[in-house]
Length: 167
Image (cartoon, rainbow, N blue to C red; front, side, top):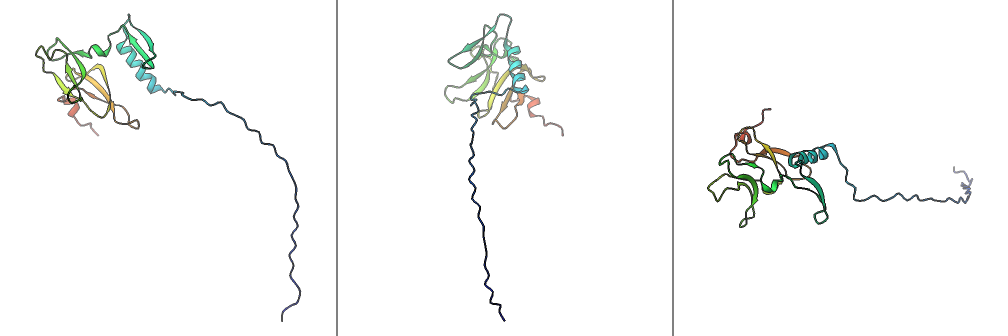
C-alpha cells in the first residue's frame, strides 16, 4: 500500500547583492617592434664587415627605410673577380627579356662567357665569399620564412654543388 504522506520540497534562496567594481588596466600598445636575435645580428654583422671599407659609412635612406652603406665596395659594382677571364667581375644580373636572375661576368661584351643560372623563386643573397672548389661566389637562399638559410656555390657546374652530403 501506498503511504499517503505528501512529498514536499523546500528551497530556500538567499539573495545577496554584492557590488563589485572592475578595474581595467590599460597596457601600452607596442607596435612595429623588431625582435633581434643572435642569428639576425650575426648576418647583419657579416654583411657590414664584408662590404664596409675604411672610407665607408652607414646612411639612413628614408625612401627605402633602411640603412645603406655608402662609399664602399658595394656588391652593385660586382661580387668578385671573374675566375675565367680575370678582367671582369661576377655580378647578379636580371635578364630584360625573360626577367630571370643569373650570375654573369661584367666583361661579357669583351668575350667572357662565364654565366650561371640562379634560383628564381627563392629569396637570395649573394656574398663575396669564394667557393673552395671553383672560386665563384657563394649564395645564401631560402624559399620561405619557415626554412633556414642554405649556402651553396653560385656556379651551376661546380662539384661542391652536386656533391651529396654524407649521412
